[in-house]
Amino acid sequence: MLQTAERAILNKAPPGEKETILRGVVATNFSLLKNNRFSNGTIPASIGGRYDDKHFENTVWVRDMTHAVQFALDPDFQEAFPHLVKDAQKLYIEGMKGLLEMQTCPEQIERFKKRPGPPNEKGYRSIGDQQAPAIKFYGPNGSIVREWGHNQPDSWGILLLEAGKGIQQGLPVLEAERFNPGEVLANITSYLANLKVERLMCRSIWERDYLESPSSSRRTVLAGLEEMLEVWDQIEQDSQKKTYSLPINQKEILTAAKSLRNLVREHSGDYTDTDHPFAEDLAQLVVLDDVDLPVDEQTAIIKAIAMGELENNLGCYRWIGDSWKKEGTEAKWTMGKSFIARYYLKRARILAKTDSSASHRYLDHGLDRIQHILNIMEDYNYLPELFMYGPKTMTYRPNRNDLAWGRSANIRALSSAVCTLTQLKEAA
Image 1 (cartoon, one colour):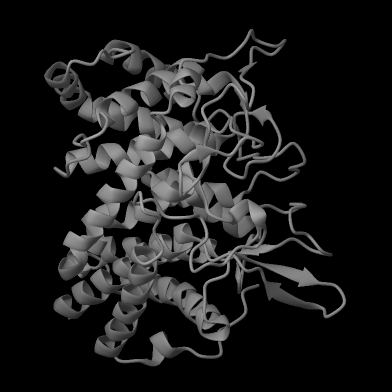
Image 2: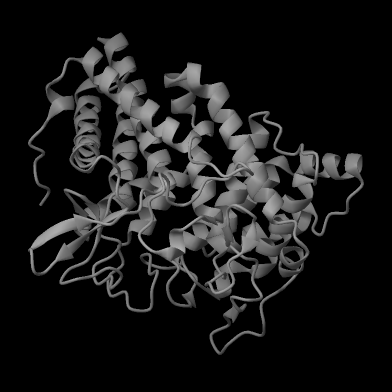
């Protein structure tokens, strides 16, 4: 059961005051992301000079960096904070170009040409971590972090998805002075399409064991490939203008996407580790936040998280049985609150014109989760990545990581709250 927040600031405050609180938190989160960039525009996984261990020191993950600038393209953010849009788009462009330029080193280009080996007895193929394109870099110089589990296809799926959205919004994603971003995107697209993720042994979003590609990896890669199909004409035009060759054509991308789409929901749940006894996983909420899913799939994810009892007052367990940072019981990951909040707030907005009562219920569900986040930030003066249980103290304590991804997800959720409050106020 969820614990009720003691400081119900949002639920007790008048609508105008609610918006003031939300806007202030968004401004703080935005400033932190802007002020914690490397010289190449990329944002470290953990900001504010904080890191839980050396793996987070001055490092950039493809996935986390993409998520860190994701909010700039969010329609709710753009509507709620029009005065921040220009600066946010600049943050997105500089970060995305810095990340794409990292993919132009000769070794990484060769890695994008690698393909999985022969299938095992179940028809699944794989690719080694040191053959797969690197997904983690040292931010200051863009060099590859050598000893890492790089076979993570969903990292490239989310990058293609957000890069494609930027192109569709008319941002100059394909323009750069020192390299051709379109060529990089084409290399990534070719690599992903040829992985055949529906039958791939790989690591999941949580970077754990090799396993048969989980639902979350498949869904994210599919979204990335489909987004590239939406902008492929522009990439083709860019290649002709700048005279670089494309390693894949539109028909081949279509074929790969169709094959993956047929099996994207093959599994009954999301199993992101070999030691994963239950079908529910926080990765399902990541997909819910990233991908424009059918309504029935959205509802099924929310029900699964509730049935699996993953949500708690400090966030969500990744899955029941997760051994990472487990000290007596599983760690609690704060970003889950933003994902759930945004789902309820977007549903509230959809229902605002047709069912006011239901809309307000969903609004309350969303604000409850945001309140938990605000309480955490007030108590610790940052937004911890997770909380670990201390058997000796019998209390949960935060780790030191302050994830850029978590701050961006928070901005998205709060933006949806501002938009929903505004719409309900206008409808009253």
